[in-house]
Image 1 (cartoon, rainbow, N blue to C red):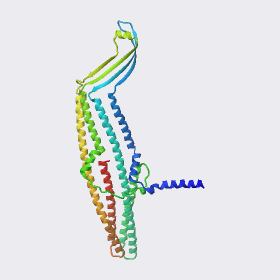
Image 2 (cartoon, rainbow, N blue to C red):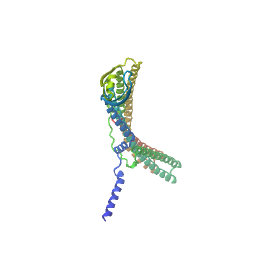
Image 3 (tube, rainbow, N blue to C red):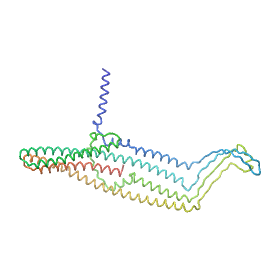
Image 4 (cartoon, helix red, strand yellow):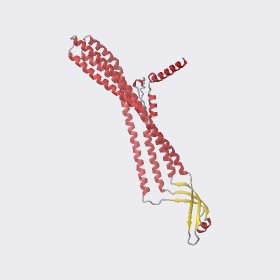
Length: 418
């Protein structure tokens, strides 16, 4: 009995686990987390960020001394002395004292490169998050529009039955039946389109999360916070937080660094070199003949003229800086225009939602009255069709406005604070 009890318990747990998504639903944040975990783009950007981190570490190596060792065997036949062989082991050290600020500026550039890789990662996360939100909202909107299409189809089916009954009783003309049939055909087309739109939206979300999605499991967003946005506050947030804008800003800083580095070509370079020799064989003859010995030296070099290459390179970097400066300015203007457009659409959607919600109760009451009058042969079929279309349009407007508001809010967040 214990064995059967255990089997029953295991099967019960498996059943509960299998229906768990249906019991608890699938929320937007859960979909976002799944999409972020599944995205190969995000993983790729993480790897690039790791690479840039090591490039940052490598940039500091220019300030460290270098140490090399070598072994030399040579056969020497001086004119005035006897031939001899030489076995030499040496250790060479070098340290850079000054290279026209090039090494220092390379570390600054490596920091900017690391910043840009971080911004690339934030951009990828923000894009995946936005796309997941929009796909999620699209499913909710498609479900709502599908439900409206089903209700419209059902209402027209009932109207067609009534029109057929009245026609058979000789109370109405056949054209009413034909009109109802045409209206029902249009409603069926709308219904099929709504189903296709839902399938497409579901497919989009499935591709993002990397798993099949059941639209019935998608949780409804019951409350919409109608935020009162201020354009200047949004623009300020965008200029401080938008990864794409900050990426160009980092490019501008890199262009400034490159311009300074180009100026460094006109400055001297200063190195210290040291070599220690160990003469294994032939040392005496070498000292006598060549005077070779351990040595330390300071190397100073200064470019006096190299065919105007350095001067022209500086001009290139200068104009690159100016070009990126204007690119940054234009991007800020484009963000401002984009925000203005979104805010206009947002206000329009809020008004549409408010008006449509106020009209819904009236449209339902109007349809009920005209439907009852039609059953009593007091209203025409045209009035009934118009009442039904009005009700359907109001419901559609509510669904469109409601989910458009959510989509606009997601786009605003992507620009200002992703």
